Image (cartoon, rainbow, N blue to C red; front, side, top):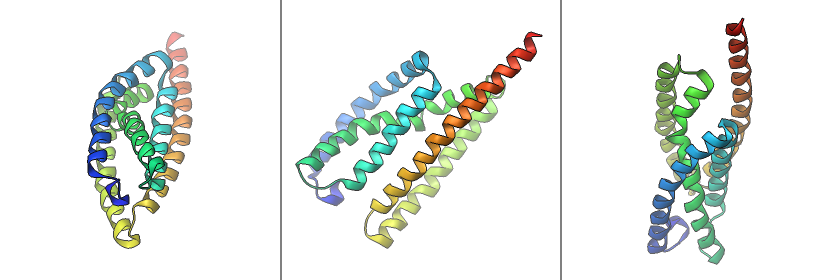
Length: 170
């Protein structure tokens, strides 16, 4: 936000609000999962992540830009549970309790590897292009693919789980 000229004090306000909203959205994510299931909860978090990247890509130092910056603060709070509380939820819901411990370790490791790869790649993009905008668009596209793939994975895993339950019933 500061790269596009938004005042540091305003950025601090947005990020302070973001931190408060994040606490609430972590609880809300758990509630959404309990009430509506994995597919809905993942979709909400994924759409928030896609929106955040689009907002950062088009952000400017204007009245609209400052409004979008505040929207970023809210939406990024909705997207961040993907990196934290959604990992154990995904491991349990997709792979079940028997494989939970093994799969959760893999999920966390892959998530950490993404951080290790993503940050230098984003910085390289900035050094090469003079802006993070191309990386935001690339990440947005990747997140769209991930959203679609996870919908498929959730469907397949639930079908497999139902098949196992049906076999155990006989």
